[in-house]
Length: 284
Ligand SMILES: NC(=O)c1ccc[n+]([C@@H]2O[C@H](COP(=O)([O-])OP(=O)(O)OC[C@H]3O[C@@H](n4cnc5c(N)ncnc54)[C@H](OP(=O)(O)O)[C@@H]3O)[C@@H](O)[C@H]2O)c1
Image (cartoon, rainbow, N blue to C red; front, side, top):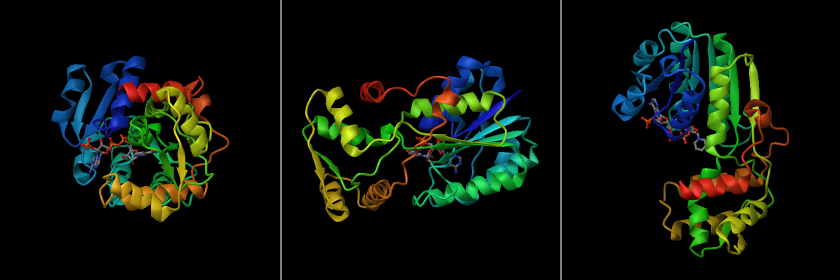
């Protein structure tokens, strides 16, 4: 059996490979990356490093040759990822890959989250390919909040326009471990896994942050416009501010509230406790 991970020079992909290396021999692991020079450390460990660019479909068929099980990590190129992911699925078909795991998003099938459409289209393309699949519907990375956690540690208030909306934060490392388990394991054909931590409000997250950083953090509830202005004044680039505002709106609308999670079942252990995960990302 040979598995392949795309995006292995990205943050999630690197952790997936790290996890795979603990469970299967390096000789069974391949990665497909845009720049193989960035994966020389993996070659040194015996991982098969291949060139694959979602924007160069011809590179993908070659990259996926001889692969039994493929993990497509969703691309960070949010403006082009539907054709990119479709190219990857077509290449997997051409290379006769036997299984595709795909990192999707919570409730992709009917989510109103502004990012969900891309994942929905990709899931459809994978189903249409006829290749057995597993959809890893990841909730929010706790690491997304790192900048805010650092700001509040330096005395800023926790600013939010997300109201009482809840989020199933979990660490990137837990999502990566789940992906590695599904990729290297058996019994996951045609599965859809909702991977979420316990849904928490902003106040509940802030309580955990306060405990970890050892100081009280005031929560400042504002409307979207004020939130955007505060982010802008804090130095967030103009191009990023609307994205952050959309995230707050989506959280407020409940797009990241997942009550029944498959995380523990897939991991075979509880999700890393929030305080522990916060400490780990702050010390990384
Ligand atoms: N649920 C969440 O909270 C959350 C948060 C952030 C992101 N995400 C999603 O999860 C994915 C993985 O997260 P991450 O933290 O690992 O993000 P990341 O570090 O930005 O990694 C994204 C990966 O996509 C690869 N990529 C971009 N364009 C590509 C192309 N044309 N061909 C091949 N690969 C391409 C990048 O390749 P290079 O290594 O060559 O740059 C990188 O490895 C993201 O891409 C995004 O879709 C989810």
